[in-house]
Amino acid sequence: MVGKGARKHNGHALATACGAGGTRNAAAFRQRGLPLYSAIYYEPVARPARGTQMTRRQDAMLTETAPQAHPPHAQDMQGVRHFSDSIAVTGVLPGSRSFGRDELLALADVRSGPATIACYSGRHVRDLGGMRGVRLTALLDAAGMQSLPRAVCKRLVIAALAGDGYACLFTWHELYNTPVGEGAIVMVEQDGVALPPSAGGLQLVSLGDLRLGPRQASAVNRIEVRGWQAAG
Image (cartoon, rainbow, N blue to C red; front, top):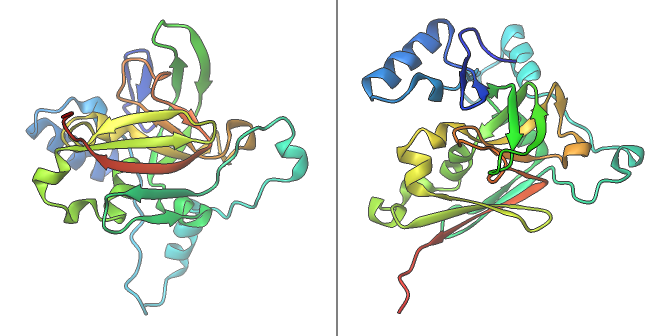
């Protein structure tokens, strides 16, 4: 579902920030000199402090934002070669860890769409409707990215790996210092369906790219972080 004020950019729609919180987001992006389309609409849900009783409204909001996704039935998996409902963050980060399906569903606060997947040549691959997911940077931060020295971060390469071995590559600079990072999303829901088996479950898209095909993958199961080393 696209928030009010969505704009077309490079052939696909990115939902711009809307509502009271969205207005603040949009103003922040203008102050930083970033294009407004990079302020992808998201709906964070505040969680109560540990030991605090949730109200019915908070409980309902969390339930709506993080629906329980059950493992796919055998008939849903027919013809599906690769499927992933969890993802591991590995490599040089100090808190390398795994995220299960329920945790990913709860973390997914980014909503966007529709979007068109096309190859670099322009060949149409498929269309995406409404989508919900978690930013790649959120998973990296949960694994300790922010605790690394900046000089180390600037030399990092991040690979999102799919079940078939395909790799989508990013640099720290792209994810944390350009609008690309706002649109690099691990999708957990497509058109209202959580972890659709036909799409391989977890998917990665980079909505800030000119063509979405080269840097999108299905059945994403691992994010590997490595430091770049000069040859010789």
